[in-house]
Image (cartoon, rainbow, N blue to C red; front, side, top):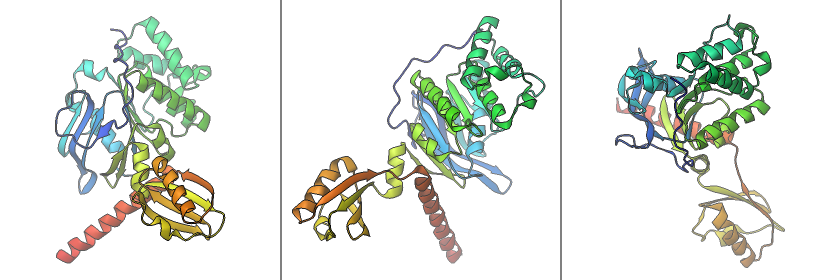
Length: 347
């Protein structure tokens, strides 16, 4: 059997993932419905529900120990949920048919390849497990090793490669059989920034060819490279949205920074319906939170001018995802502390 056929190309959806997972979705590659995983008294995954549609990239982001890797292991069938249901390509991961498993690529967080085999031998061996013919194996092994910049190191034993090179070798092995669904657990960890960009270009190419990717990452700014972001903290799914919507959720809207020629009284802005908040950053500098920056900026500038002000600079501020991530996680932790305090008082 040769490489599985590619899925029909589709354009990436603007909002590829939703929390509604109860109803069957013919376009869903992955469905998680109320999944919980306990290890003794430790609750690693707490009632996560989400749906991932075919031809999209879902980024799973969260603090260390938040449940990202456990979630991926539930999807691969390495772990069974304590409660809830997981469906991947329409099947229970614990009882995948062989043909279904061949449609999936998996890159674990830890190095699992053979240290005594060369880089090329490792990738070729993985390809052979999927029944790929020699000619196709030879071509795909070269392609994926070149992609991850390991072709020149193809003759080196895997155990003698650096940690970053071993990560790249794991990624090459996950890609070699051209799967239609990829689970990648921190694929860019330990990889230099230039190669990281190249890896994401390849992930986008796969997505545009109709592949589905679930990617965990320790680099929060990589959220912008995903169609949808699942933010997990303490085993809970605390936010699920496209990157821009996630930013709006954290900041309470879009942020517009305005500088006026002189000090300006903001009273004339308070009656504008699109304004949610006004923060003065200095005598002539404002930070305005609005529903939508693209439509609000002209109205805000006009209102300032109408009230005797002169705008000398205006721009939309885009807080980094480090800031967005920190705000949402801290907001969740604060809510949990309140829940805990109320529970203790009730007891």
